[in-house]
Image (cartoon, rainbow over all chains, first blue to last red; front, top):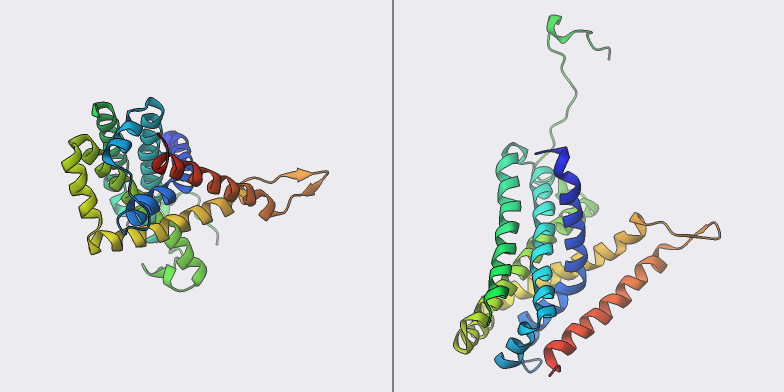
Length: 116
Length: 141
C-alpha cells in the first residue's frame, strides 16, 4: 500500500488538478452564484437535459466529477498527514479519501448513465 | 554523533534531537498559511463536485426535482458555501497555473524563458475554456 501505487495516484492528483483549475470555477460561478442570484438568466431544464444527453457532454461531466475527486483525495490526505499531523490514522485516512473519490466516481457514472 | 554498530548491544537508547512541532505550525508565517490554504482548497474542489453530482441527480429526477434543487441553491447557507468555495477554487487555479513554470523549465537559445511567459498561456486557455462552457450552457441549441 506504499511506494508501489504512489505514482498512479499522483498522476490522478495532477490530472484532477488541471481539470479542477480549468473547469470548476466557471461551473461554480454559473450554477452556484450567477443563476441562483439572478445575475444571468438560468438555462431551462429542457436545455440542460438536451446538453446532458449528448455523449460528449456525458464524458465531459464524468471527467469533471471523477478526476478532481482524486485530486482532493491526494491533497487532503497529505494535509491531514503533514499539515495537521494526524499521521497515526494513516490507513483510515487513506481508505476514506480514495474510497470517497471512488464512490463519487461510481455515482457520477451511474447518474450519467441513467439520465434518459 | 557516532551511532552504535549494532543497536542490539546499546546500553542506552540514543536520544535524537527532535523538537516538537505544534499542530498549528502553519499559523506562524504567511508562506506556511498560504501553503495550508492551498492544500485546503482541495476540500472546496470536492464540495463543487458534490454540488455537480447533486445537480445531475436533480436533472435525472425530472423538472420538479430540478426546480427544487434550484430553489435550494438560493438559500443563504448554500450561497455562502458557494462564495467561499469559489474563492478557494480560484485560489487553486491561480496557484496551480503559477506552479507550471516551476515544474517545467523551457529554454530558448540557451536562455530560460521567464516564468510569467510559461504561466500566461494557462490563463489565456482558462478564459477560452470558461467562455466555451458558458456559451454551451447559455446559448447552445
